[in-house]
Image 1 (spheres, one colour):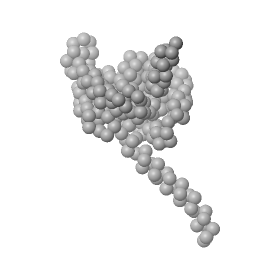
Image 2 (cartoon, helix red, strand yellow):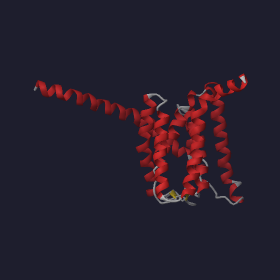
Image 3 (cartoon, one colour):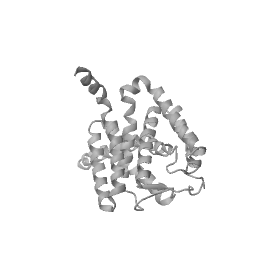
Image 4 (spheres, one colour):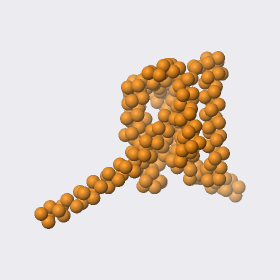
Length: 254
């Protein structure tokens, strides 16, 4: 009994990350089978609740960054799906669960560095993730086209950015963890039919896999934008609050 309890205690820090991966798969399978817009909206409301629940257990800074991720991710989705047209959702919209889903991916990545495994084996984890991503990219150029899958030049074009994020950025563990979350949701979402990547990417005319192998680099851009923008937005908000608090005093003096 004691070894079993010890194992449970050792796995406790990983509960949120395991839950988020499982929730992602279940969410996307349900969306792919439920059909209409009504169930999709319900899944969106549920995902916002999951995000709110998960953020209760993190620091105020991370909480702020995750909520900032929601509108930033929405803008990227509008561009990527509705303007650029690199992929299309099943109902030709942006599902309500997608913006909070991006925030959950960000939360998954930014909290990964605090996990016990990452504290002792972070570099091994990062290199393993990059190795798997590289193998997928190479397969998209060599093996997959001969096994009924698409040639994936778009994934190969994204690979250098992904490699830089993992090898040279200041947050390699975050980006490696984001790749795991992204690979999970992209594979689950495309298999469930929730969205599909076009065979030839607009503008660049690069052949694209469904999903592209290193498309996690795109998520890295989104999450990197959040990490950059969140402190600036917070500082601006605090300045507005200070001005709002000072104005009544100035009015009384005047």
